[in-house]
Length: 231
Image 1 (cartoon, rainbow, N blue to C red):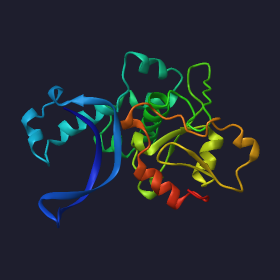
Image 2: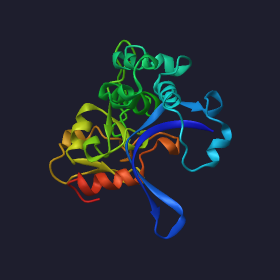
Image 3: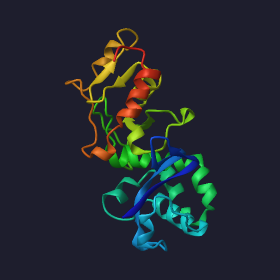
Image 4: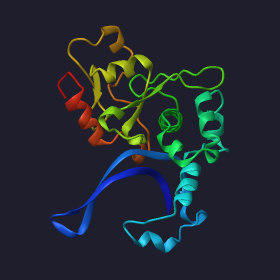
């Protein structure tokens, strides 16, 4: 039992088909870099028996600060070398809670760390290319599948690691991804030389963990709203 992320709740309403259920509209969702066990907080374990839990603001701030910080040991420590933007995350406990949640630099750095460095190990999903600088920083970008401006969350399953050229093509709908991992390209407009860079078997290199793979709902959104080819 642990806290794994946070989001703003905009509204809650009853399920018209089941009076024992309810729905909630969330925005600005973000995954934590580190899960925060409930036993390590001031929140009692039996509180999780409730669907909605109200906790003190200071407690929420502490949980968010710990969750958004970067691990200090193991393989994750090595990925921090050379990642100047990740340094923004090391002093979160000193930042006001609202600033932590709303600061775009912090959110971008956290999103990139979880997608590129952790889930994809610095490897572009479409090409299999993994390039790093002298400090271990991967060249790949963390691309949102559903953009933030369209209310896409900063969660791993709404992200995919891509080289800058593939990121550009993905954002402009020249390339996309099927639910089963097949790489989709437009019939016209995607450069022939660029096609040679794609994974030879036509399938994207995705994380092995199901909870880190692109979510079908976000992929469906991209194919319907961005992709200019036939799915």
